[in-house]
Image (cartoon, rainbow, N blue to C red; front, side):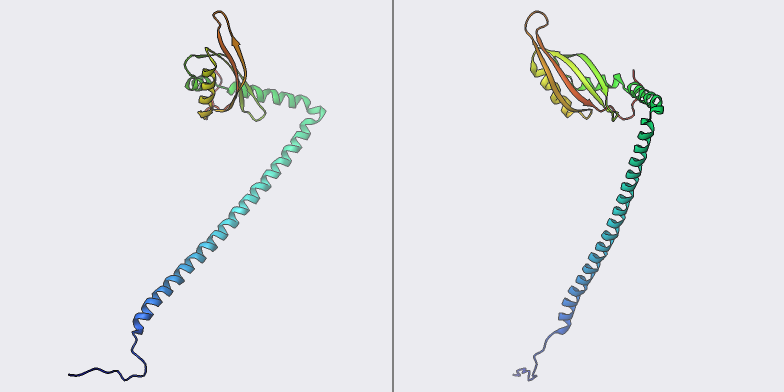
Length: 195
């Protein structure tokens, strides 16, 4: 019977397997590091471009504000008062003409609860060409007006509806509640001429 005895001063180690395992790990780590460096550099240049674009937009905005202030100064001169007033009148007339009663009625029909009727609607345009509606409604009780407010809050066309006044009619055929509501109105895209 033979017994194998290793008389070497250093024991045998499989160095090939060690280098393959740790070499692969080292290569993967180097690739991951290179990828992260690439992503960081790309993000850095991208953010620089976005900041430059934002600075250009801010500069353009400042330029437009300066131009607007100069135009306002020119229009504020006494000799230009007639042109300014005529311009404001025409702009308001165009805005009023662009208001579509048909679209408003379609939007109101979608939010009106049963048992409530509209007695008056008065649209008013503000300085930013947005419309504010003053709506008067009548119903048998207050709940229908509250339901209308909730429906308006869910609609994309009405913003910040508020119940501003409420009148309770006690006797006769006109018994019920009259409510005044104020809301911002955002018409559909592509307004047609007023009907």
